[in-house]
Picture 1 (cartoon, rainbow, N blue to C red):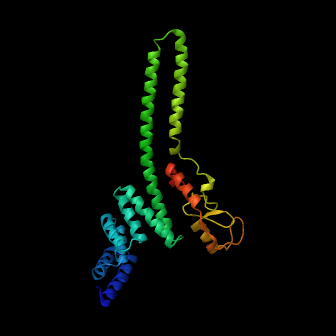
Picture 2: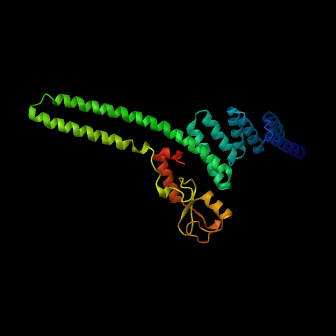
Picture 3: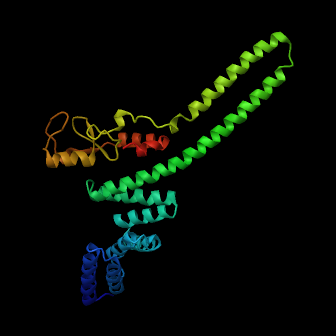
Length: 277
């Protein structure tokens, strides 16, 4: 059981650590947070603060260790999931890193939808998912090319065998061979279309930023916006819909789950779009 005196000392050490951190004295900050943890090991913010210092020093193994401990103490810690995701990405554990970043993003949206961390987490998540797509796309491209070449070779061998047929049959065989090659190439061209970067459909993009939706919300007038963008508009410009000009309050915004699902479905098959904005 932690005494009141120990808790007070730990809190003062946290403040000292924060001061050291602001002055970029990360070693001293780590020492202060470590001492705070010694007094109060069950306070998650001490662990995440120390993890942030390790991040600044690119000591990703210690970042991972501290974040895992923080998550054990508080599973809803946005910073812990976020930095753990970054640490896993550094270890090239892309799938696990993406899971942690996604968890951080979901928690962050619930706590503060327009906070700076939500945008920062999205950027890192998008980069990681783009990398996953890039790796998968390269493999698909290689596999498709290998299969295409094998099919073309098989057709050429068949055509070679057909050359032994009577003269009238040869003309038909040549025409058939050409058509088969064209059809084959069309099939493989179609199979690789999703991996070719293009334009994201307008209905999946915010009408203000023109970027693909991340967290879409719909207004009573039926217009869908990016949540952080419309909240910023309501706060800084005025309480009205920027397109219809109808009066609009934050409480009237409703998550557009249909568009959100459509965006995710599109991104699942067009991973290049993570880099579109």
